[in-house]
Length: 171
Image (cartoon, rainbow, N blue to C red; front, top):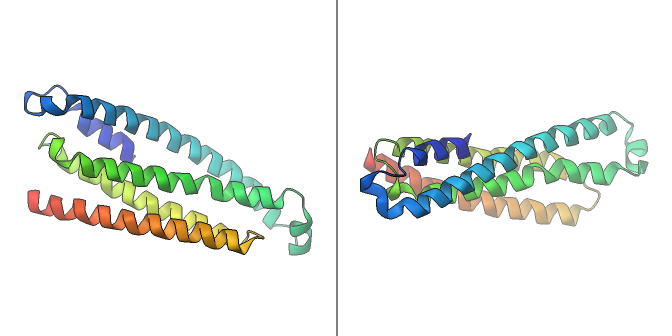
């Protein structure tokens, strides 16, 4: 949703005389947002499949679950889909920030809403990863993933706050 909304705002900006100096950057951003949208949709499909597989294993008693040769790979798959989604959402958020002064003034609020959605996606993905980290047999690996996500979320929070502050001054 974040990528599609940002694309919409930029599509109504490209080709406008007031923003002609930014056309190449806007067109590149549109292509990046479209790619991000496609990737995020693919990750949703992967997340659904991973959750279905993990859900079946979680119905087993713990000893049987841990002995299952597919268990670790299944847990990793359940983490692997939302983890890159957080990274993509953070990239969308960064791109929205970079485009604030290069977007049609009547659509800048739409770009800001795209940033809100991207920021929320970073944190939603963080939760979806965290819920499965305790299931990883290797807790040092889980700690590293947790720290990477914490760092990403903190960076996203700072970027979002910059966008929010800019928007509240602009509107």
